[in-house]
Image (tube, rainbow, N blue to C red; front, side):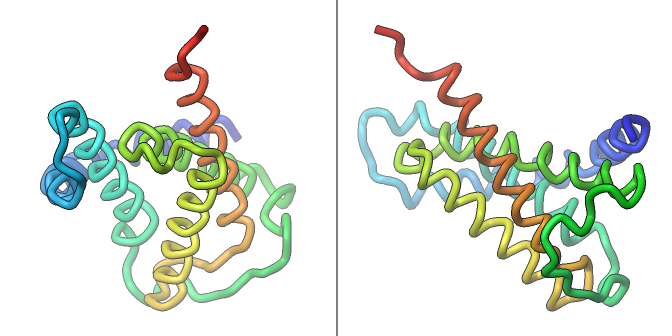
Length: 168
């Protein structure tokens, strides 16, 4: 299972240039819609990183596949775990994919630093990806994917809290 995860993570590196190409303008565009204040310059990097990572997520989960190659809807809980090492790797990769997302959401948006906001943002993003995959047949709509992506967002939120919570 570890070899599948490692191989898939290495393969995902090919999407980083596309993430930069789309993410930097997206981050700057997001910054244009934020409130103008003294801290605006400090928010440039987090916004660009958020745009970059969102572009990478969309590329990996949506644009890297041909339309019509995957059809299906799976609403059974935990149906992907335990079938074989490949499927178990996919489950773990879904969690890993959204850990940086949860972290970067908190870093880029102050309003997303609460547990509930970050979790809901991860859920909405994951649900959007799953719906796009279903509509374009570029991936299977799986309830397990949504749950594992939410778990990844929560772990990312926890990591952010560990590193950026002020200690008294």
